[in-house]
Length: 398
Ligand code: NAI
Ligand code: NA
Image 1 (cartoon, helix red, strand yellow):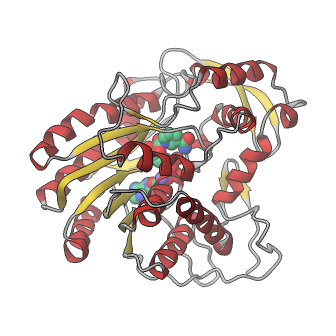
Image 2 (cartoon, rainbow, N blue to C red; image 1 turned 45 degrees about the vertical axis):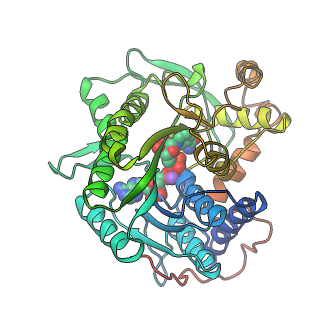
């Protein structure tokens, strides 16, 4: 099959197996170039393991400290004549590389919010690893079916008190325009978003894993959050998704309590704004990211998901002592993004940005490259005119 990018809105409908494999290889090479992480994790469960920060966490654990990994995700498999999703190809490529390096790696494809997938994961841990010493929680989803009640929740991306108007960009066309997003109509919009992206499912996972005895003494668990600049507060941190992040962060004390008798600890890490399938769906954010990339690249402090996760593991989670936390008890790897000089430069550019000057003022090119890279496109070493097999050998995705 000849596989080319095909987009609808902010979604890319196709994914290139060899291109995604190149993307995985690039991330593995980066982690290897940084050397081994002393006293890193050994047996790791990653929930949301197929794309974005989740696959970067899995790669860092495996290739940074030789960890055995189990990955849970929700992706569409490839079959004859039908493409799989990028996360499917990512996971196949990851498993192939891990196995070639002599590392244990198995994956479970299904709804992580369900009791059934939790049970299946626990059985696999018991059978193959006994216990895990790190649980990474990196789910991002627009909906969740509650496992106890069957109620289906859909998250929304809305401001809370008043309409929000600001610039946004269509990153495919480069058109910058004003967008107005109306606030939530009722408390339900907020509650639904918290039900999907808040901390309840993380808690359910840790409760079930603990009750099954599959968490090792001294286990760590980490989930990911975002704060960002004031200009995105109305749509992000002070919006519905921000309420969900408040809820996620507020889960930490409860998990620490739950894990205290096995000397376990839970963290939320606040990460940098980066191009992922989830973040490209948030209005205003892609323009912010394009300007942020421009400024951070000029200052020589740009990082992608793999650089962020390698730094999280090597310089925060596994330094041999407890990581520094902010006033709200969070790990910060968004420290470079939030630096005053970076934020001032972005705010200055933000005011000036128009459709006409976008290509010069911002790193929209870098944004697009990263976006297409997520689906295995825009890699120089791949010939996209060439016939390629859409079905790839997958060692152990259940
Ligand atoms: P992503 O969209 O790249 O990854 C989401 C992962 O969740 C994928 O592996 C997907 O298969 C999995 N998933 C979704 N629904 C599932 C389900 N029902 N069952 C099993 N797996 C499911 O997203 P990204 O951006 O890596 O987000 C991960 C976390 O990082 C989120 O909590 C997000 O809010 C946070 N974060 C993201 C930032 C960004 O700029 N992208 C910045 C800071 C934090
Ligand atoms: Na992820």
